[in-house]
Length: 448
Ligand SMILES: Cc1cc2nc3c(=O)[nH]c(=O)nc-3n(C[C@H](O)[C@H](O)[C@H](O)COP(=O)(O)OP(=O)(O)OC[C@H]3O[C@@H](n4cnc5c(N)ncnc54)[C@H](O)[C@@H]3O)c2cc1C
Image: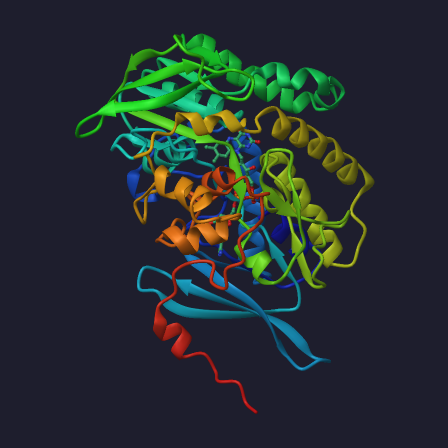
């Protein structure tokens, strides 16, 4: 959205293909209009800035400089045309009736965001256990709570935002259970002090926890969820530095929902399908390699936001604007470039502080499902490694089907890779989402 506004201001014709139904991405999710929310801004802390940006976006749309295509899920980006007159072709599955759509472009900016990292534990597939970001999304776009008494757990600053929103909307949040220790930030004090905006955001979240009487348990994890038809309680244990549960520290917290997530994973299918170079991040995920102008290693393909490493909404906006300047062939203002450097340094500090320790593997029992689409338990993954000689996540997938289901490894991929001891790599998949076969059948055939 930020990139589209700047690019349109420079006179470029912009098409925004968005798998979502309304502009704004993850951070600016809003209630669907039919829900009649009276104060859609209530769950956002910088609504005015968003409203101004959306107004600019809509003005360019009305003037024909921006075309917004909601509910368009791009499944591939390919180079077409001649060597001298080539262009990018983006193919998408559009709307509830899954029609085929295609757009041509001279330049492509990938801002496909991220999805949540899940680390399995016994009981994590019970109804009532939802992603932490999922809980926030349910609330922001559907105005529903996952339960009345919700434990928020996992790792990363999103937990604080989620707990604050759930409590503000009327849920009881008995505890925020954070696996990392916030002391991980101490060694990065200069990067923190250079980002007063981020510190202020942290203070807002901390204030919300105090106001709602929410306990913050650091270096603790939910190691089991209990219940028959849905979650009724969770077991929380204290962790050592490597996230290994300490014997004798387990206690039970009653709840009717658990919102859990261990940070975010950049969503890179389109980029890796194009062959864009990647780099390992401090949080154990893989992100795109981008230069100072947000160019990827593939000429004509830019990237911004979480695709270049998880870093928060402000950084995503700044990077989008820098990319748009570059695509329009102008230099981004020096202040914008400085801000990006500061925010990236903060993001790296945050990533390192919340990197999962290897001891999370001890949360698993043999029968704990790791891949929930294909129902693959932990013992089969361990067997693939110890008895069948798998040395990487791809071989485990071929031997066990872990990662072959509907979600295509978005749920279990990070956990499987870690169980194998594989270095993080971005999966290369030719289709970024499920595509009806008729779309493939209708593709123009290659001549000669
Ligand atoms: C629960 C939660 C709370 C958060 N709280 C904060 C906070 O308090 N402060 C903060 O700074 N950050 C917060 N964040 C992070 C913030 O949301 C992100 O940093 C920001 O949204 C990143 O912007 P982005 O443009 O990179 O990706 P997103 O905002 O995720 O946007 C990606 C867009 O790409 C679309 N898309 C993805 N794949 C495709 C495809 N193949 N075809 C078409 N469209 C596609 C998606 O539909 C989406 O609209 C939070 C995130 C979550 C999940």
